[in-house]
Length: 155
Ligand code: INI
Image (cartoon, rainbow, N blue to C red; front, side):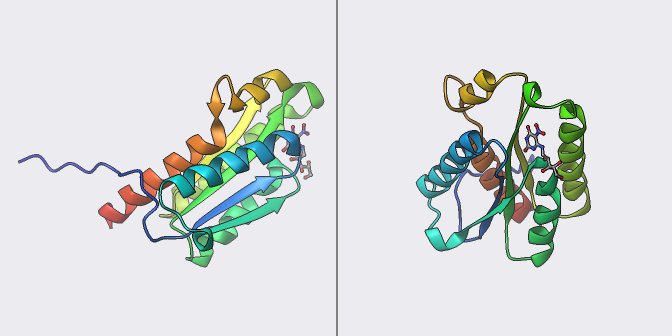
């Protein structure tokens, strides 16, 4: 018989932390609303959801690491928006946050989900924050629930 592990997309009883950056808040607030709505629609009560605001994408990793280490959360959802047009150091910001979140996942058993938009234009970001291309915050929440369930089954 084949043993198969497949995560269910349901909030379960665990707590979820959302780390969201204030930079480009016009976009990130929409990602946050999408993530919270998705968690709630899949059974999460308000008391299971914590939100931590940080200044920019570069600060997401540090707060996420602390939340992971607290042992209080079954998943951490990282939300931000890096938009190329606004900065010469776009690539450094993207690299820093992507590498940081990747490192947390490598070092711990708590799924830490990359819900950071990296876009060339503001229009692309708007498209991914609840319009044409869906809501990346909601997508990140779905991934968080599924991975929390997978990790529970694996432990
Ligand atoms: N932070 C973002 O979240 N998005 C951006 O587009 C961005 N740009 O364009 O610079 C950005 N920069 C700030 C950075 O994340 C840090 O907060 C800052 O460098 C202080 O460490």
